[in-house]
Each structure stands twice: as structure tokens, then as C-alpha cells.
Length: 181
Image 1 (tube, helix red, strand yellow):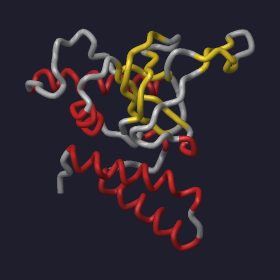
Image 2: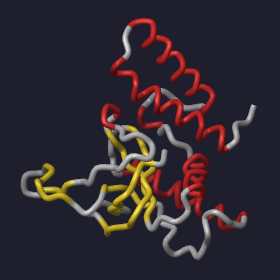
Image 3: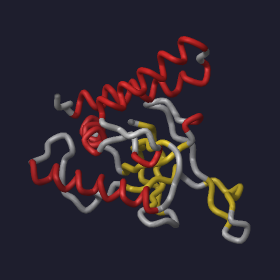
Image 4: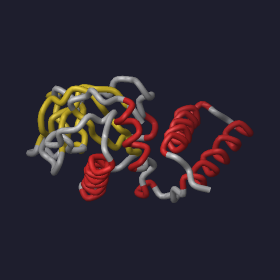
């Protein structure tokens, strides 16, 4: 049975909601939640490893179409215990202290993300041709590849909002925005 993009989005939202509630659950309730997570993973054909990625390109595209008027879209990995709720602001990142090889106390003007580079495409996300949609899908796949290549850890979330500049890593941008997926 093929799952549509909208169904994937619904399942991923359910998966994320269960994950957020998991730390406060105990006993049978927690077992039921874990069982449902596994059912959703099977439906989405998601492998259990964290590196397999919990978001699909189609689901990301659907969310971008539903939120077309943003100046920046990006993927960010976050600790599963600190995933912002869908629609919530994503905390700003901190600059890297290269001498000490750790985060500094200098806050950046946005959250660090691997950008989904559609800035050069003259398209309207809510009214795309098939060719334009394929270009956006390719940009999403490129961002997914970069986030894997950069060895970030944690769950992948989609961030959208105001583009605030570039970061130091390959494809890194800063977004003042909210979590969409």
C-alpha cells in the first residue's frame, strides 16, 4: 500500500508527538507508545537507526508547500529530548569557539540549519509545475545528504522562517523560524 505525502506528514507528526510524550510515560503506556512508534516506522519504511532519518523528502516538500512564504528553509538535527513542538520557535544557535573546539557564549541571529537551497529558483511553492517540484525535491535531497555528511547527530526537523545569514559548515544557514516537521 502506497502512502501519500499528506499521510506521511500525518504519520510523522504522530511519531513526533509520541516521542515528545515518551519521557513522561511509564509502564504499559510507554510500551504501547513504543509499539506505535515501531508500527509507524514500518508504515513509513523507516529503519530503526538514527542515521536513517525520520523525515522523508516528500513530507518535507508537503510542509514547504503548506508554508510557502518563508525566506529560509533548513534541516536541523536536535537531541530527541529537546525537540521543539511543531509550530514552536527554534532556539537560536551559538557561535563556535574554534580555539576551544566548543560552543561559545555568543548567540547567532538564528538557528543553524542545513539550508534547502531554493533561493535561485523562481517558483511559487504553492503553485509548482512538475519540473519545479522535481527541482525542489532535488534541493531537499541535497540538504539531507549534507546533514549526513557533516556528521550531525539527533533527530532531523524542518525549520522555516526568516533567512538570517550563513554559517561555517557546508550548506549551513541561520533561520529565525519555527519547526514545521
